[in-house]
Length: 119
Image (cartoon, rainbow, N blue to C red; front, side, top):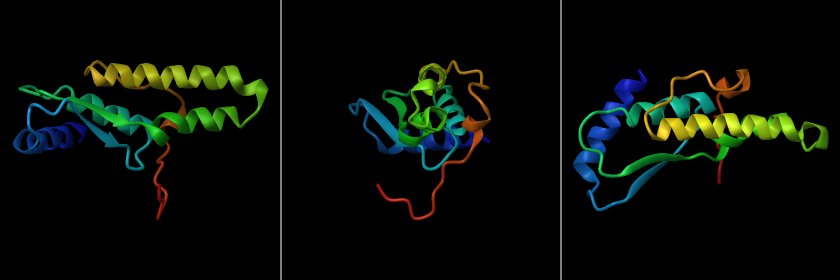
């Protein structure tokens, strides 16, 4: 479950990352936008000390629905802006452990894993 993953992740971080490190940033790793947000939220709900900020580098997990909505077309610009606002709000809430789930469309549930993807 996301809660089990979060607990294991934070446990490892507590054992290995000095408190002086200001933050830990994860890649979304091909998760869907919604999965990445739920996992971030779960990590930020783990009780006990978390001296660092926990967040994601939301490349694909923030942009996928926005780019799919926009398609480079002027007439889709407002809908793309609206989609970005939904994802940004969800991730902002998750960074504080306040995300309740369900942000965005069915596109936000699509896995973003691409075999042999390279940056």
